[in-house]
Amino acid sequence: MAPYHSRTSARDNLRSVLAVAVFLTAGACAGVAEARYGAGQCSTVASIVSEELYSSLFLHKDDAACPAKGFYTYASFIRATRKFPKFGGAGDLVTRKREIAAFLAQISHETTGGWATAPDGPYSWGLCFKEEISPQSSYCDATDKQWPCYPGKSYHGRGPIQLSWNFNYGPAGQALGFDGLRNPEQVANCSDTAFQTALWFWMTPRQPKPSCHQVIVGEYCPSAADAAANRTAGFGLVTNIVNGGLECNIANDARVNSRIGFYRRYCQVLGVDVGSNLDCAHQLPYS
Image 1 (cartoon, rainbow, N blue to C red):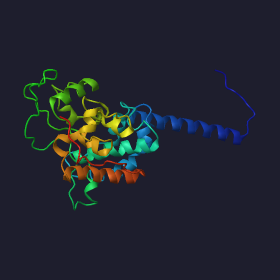
Image 2 (image 1 turned 45 degrees about the vertical axis):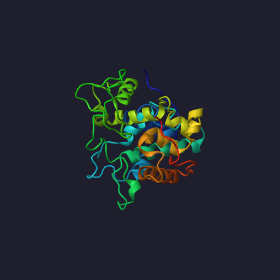
Image 3 (image 1 turned 90 degrees about the horizontal axis):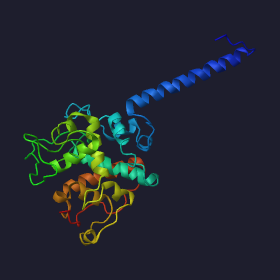
Image 4 (image 1 turned 90 degrees about the vertical axis):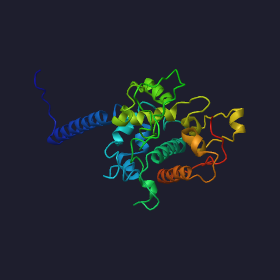
């Protein structure tokens, strides 16, 4: 190609060079972001929870005392949210923030390494564990023929939501592209898979339970059985979905209070109110 000659001034030439430099820099940064977080990194969740904010919420997740040190990265979290675009993407800004706060609160309690007098308080120690410690069983429901247990495998709690039981590992793996029955260990070995299983659980209704997402964003329509069981929408119903069989219909349960404590903190940080019906003390669990 022949050289292009023009009568531009030195200032014009400098402007052109700077414009090209800015364009190339922006493109390079976009490429880095895409490689790190996945295509379209500027998602709803990423726009609400920056990497700096994420680190401030989980102050001690990478401490030497935490078995999950280095596992629950911001990049893995954001990549996982891209598989579930409705997470943190439904309703107005308050609703979106409240859903993110509720999700982070539930996974924080499930993986907490904190205690009452812990440095920075008990609600700064989420994402400390990635696997259940000393499980009491292999969490195999042998009566479930649709998702049969694989010999020698344990389906104890793993990942941010502490995914448990063969009837959860099977469909989670099917939805996410790994063999959850033959390779449940992947949930504790791959941080992307770990966050994806937590979001799969959060977003997926499993009759008779609605999804946690439906409850938080206002899409929950209680049945007659729900009304009779006092399953009213709110953070308390989310706890019922996650672990109601052990924690709900109990007054002042310490585990429920822990979940609420995390939720209050995250809502405060994100600048939204917590809403109503925070606990499940008067809700019957799902059978």
